[in-house]
Image 1 (cartoon, rainbow, N blue to C red):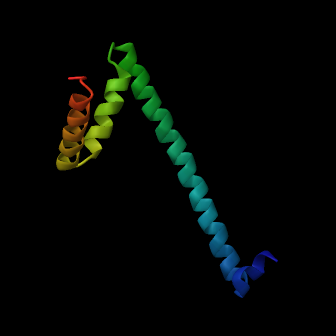
Image 2 (cartoon, rainbow, N blue to C red):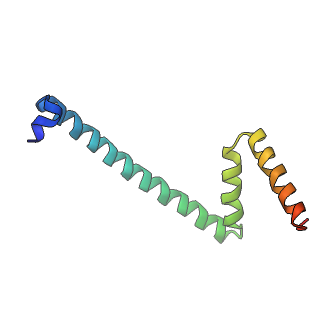
Image 3 (cartoon, rainbow, N blue to C red):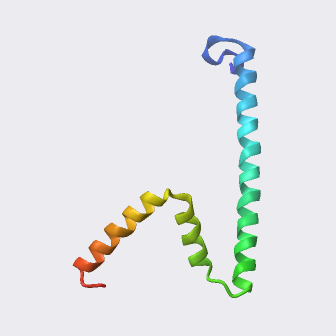
Length: 85
């Protein structure tokens, strides 16, 4: 049955198995990277840095400058309309 995936025989089954194994390896790498990031954040916290602020900075740095500036302008406009600034 596994060899008949898509009606193409063992090549298709082998190809599917390889793709799944590759995805599994990448998931393991992703878990390792997430653990490393968690370690960096724990170190930052131990040194007295605010990890919430660091995570916010990381999000900002991923964006294009123009996109971030536009988001900030809209946020400022909304906050002003609500009397928050």
